[in-house]
Length: 54
Image (cartoon, rainbow, N blue to C red):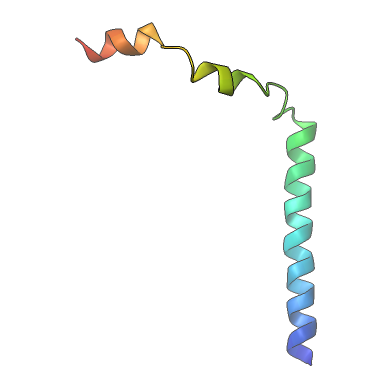
């Protein structure tokens, strides 16, 4: 039974750390540009093309 309590405490700590990381990412504007990455993949980058043909 003591192993159960240890596992519950560890799982609460892990869940709390993930919640803290999510809250930190929201407060530091990690989600401010939602469409940027999805649109960037659709367009070719000419600077990358020019650097590969040197």
